[in-house]
Image 1 (cartoon, rainbow, N blue to C red):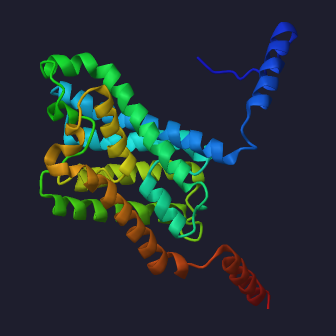
Image 2 (cartoon, helix red, strand yellow):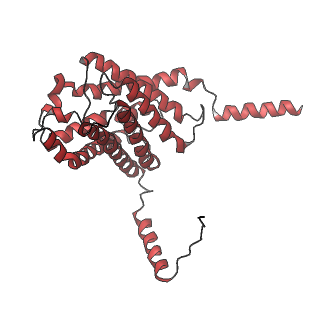
Image 3 (cartoon, rainbow, N blue to C red):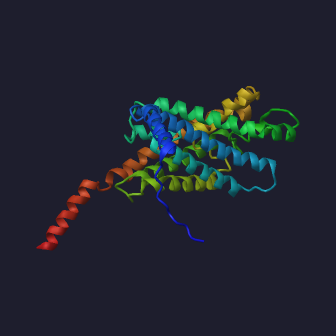
Length: 294
């Protein structure tokens, strides 16, 4: 069986219908409102990331067919799908810590940063509510109808070590994330095509969760943990969502912010500013060709 491509030209009622759709689309486009577009992209991208990522963790808790690799792979693909949704709408960050760090090193403007952060947290909040709504019956059956952090850990990260080792874990992991994300996007480096960047970042997250996920759950993202904690409070988990594990909630917030800033600055100081720019590459190529002609 072969596939034949047939050019389609709408006629009659179909043409009028499609023209009407195009006119409405033209009126609704947000190209004149770049900040609003970016906020919508960050919201939906982060929401999709949380639905896939937290959904993988939830399913693993309800079945015996799960492994640490499945969780790592699930979060990696969750990031890929989220970035494909949010990327061309604005900045494709989905992470308040990365947003602030990228602004500090001049990769994104300062003006939209705080609205973007709010949209990222809100997207994570809604994503967690969606997962809870899907699995609410399973949670209540498996945990005897009691909403406490025994089931709450499905949605948020938690430590297997003390708070200070967990904080260092988050700082180091997010520093690596920020540095490598800058490397992927640096056109003076390997010139990674834009459409491949989400895949590279997804595999990076897969590797980080697989390598550094035991101590503190590899949040690497304040929105990923804080948004779902707010969702837990909303559905009835109460203050335990924030007091659990000796008030652990601040670690996945402070750690990623510090780590992302350190990683971004270190990349720029040690790698970024030392790479030859596009203009310099063109000049050197021109000089090389002139020399060859002689």
